[in-house]
Amino acid sequence: MKPATERRRHPRLAVTHPVKVQCRMTGRYYVAATCDLSASGALLAVDHPSRLVVGQRVRIAVVPDRRQALIQSEDLAEAVVVRSHAAGRGQHVAVQFDRIQQIEHTAAPRQAA
Image (cartoon, rainbow, N blue to C red):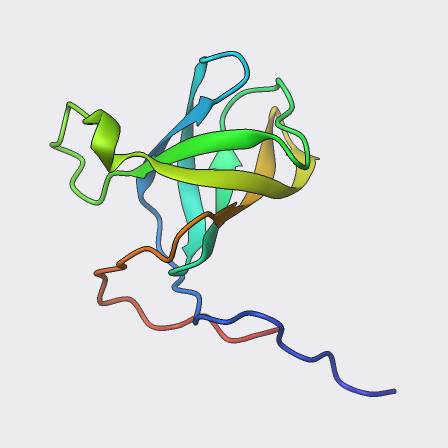
């Protein structure tokens, strides 16, 4: 059996930061946290049972400083849901950003499984 090929274009960082997710269809905001993050996408743990589904448009704001209370509209990154599944009382959602994001973290890249 051949080993799985890593398809990602950018290294993933295993970081946990608060995230605000806005569903473009409903305008509703969800509280989430990053599981991992890269310049082209993120895996999010969303603390809400309503399902965000594959293909759904969202806007994401990663908040590296927990003391930052206000999120400006220009700080929200446009993204699309590429994977979603139930996780406990919430869900895990993988998103792909429309544009490459500048990631400023000191965490080590996550190794492919």
